[in-house]
Length: 281
Image (cartoon, rainbow, N blue to C red; front, side):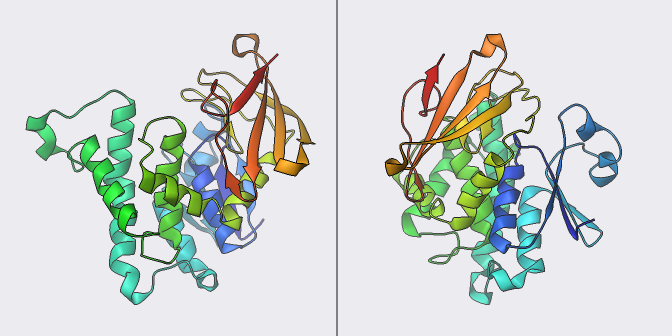
């Protein structure tokens, strides 16, 4: 058994932790769990009684919660240089926990259609959704990264909290957020995270009960369905296109999705499904 085990599902917040694992560069072993079956049964419930992923086990110690895992891995592998320097600690911890608390609550509630009324804002740690967005916008209008001009583990978590909801129009695409996203997508580890998912090309990717499929950055369908990645091909190498073909149930149709990259930057293209080019057969 490896010293570092990573419990995850490709359609989960585990993508944030996979990015962090790729950043620290330590060898790790995947343990892929299915929603509703292995995720909700032993032995995994002994790892996380909530029956949620991701989680890690490092040298026999279990860590859950994405922000905690990012901070833990930065501490456990200091040679990666992703923990805070003394002068960065205030910003590092402030914004890491702001993203794990107020941002997570505000974005989830907003997506679920729950709006805090003005008279109840004092009851909620985030106040209201618009205020949370404005605070983040102000932050990244004034600096390149959470701690200033240096990338840290806090950017893995905070950046994921910004990039993921922008894919689904859960967060307005403010200029500051787009610039921050573009900086983060130049990270080699962010690209390796995507490649690690694509390499599992013959793996069943499990049930997606709510949002959509997102395999290697490709949003395939909003409705719940089961998919199997059946083929990968390289095409139009001059502009760096990776084409992935998915076999979906009849109600989802059959799609070939092209994920466009020029260099290390991901570019939105198309109009049918979450601004990716989708060709329906």
